[in-house]
Image 1 (tube, one colour):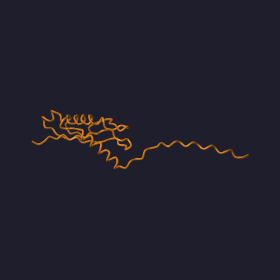
Image 2 (cartoon, rainbow, N blue to C red; image 1 turned 135 degrees about the vertical axis):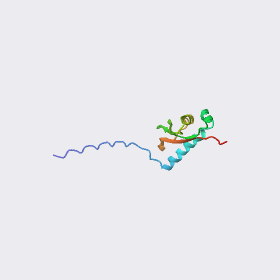
Image 3 (spheres, rainbow, N blue to C red; image 1 turned 45 degrees about the horizontal axis):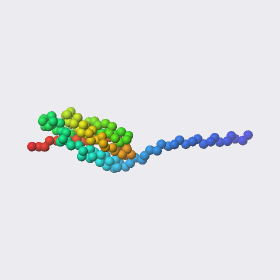
Image 4 (cartoon, rainbow, N blue to C red; image 1 turned 135 degrees about the horizontal axis):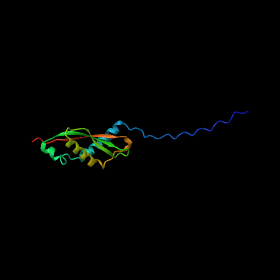
Amino acid sequence: PPPPPPAPPRPIKEIERVPPIPPLESQENLVNSFREKILSAVDVRKLYPRRALLKRWQGRVEVLITLNSRGSVKSVSVDKSSGRRILDKAAIRMVQNVSTTLTIPTELGVQEIRVPIEFKLDRR
């Protein structure tokens, strides 16, 4: 008897298209640009906590901004504390206030951005 006819070819699964990973310098430039937009919008002098001013407390807070899949801000938290809770909370509030209107292009795959907020008093 003749051999059975060959089985029809199996359909090939559609391959999910993944956008190419951009060069690191593109990511870095974008992150720096986003960070600069936030820093230029944050006015530390205007929101310096009154108690911290009176006590002459200074410090640097590293704020961590986590982005969602659409490039919008998902959360804002303290990555490195200034050592003063009042300054940490003020830094988070400042970044939250200005970051809600900013988005970062999602194709760059950036998920976190660190922003340094400096609380510094003038020497008199």
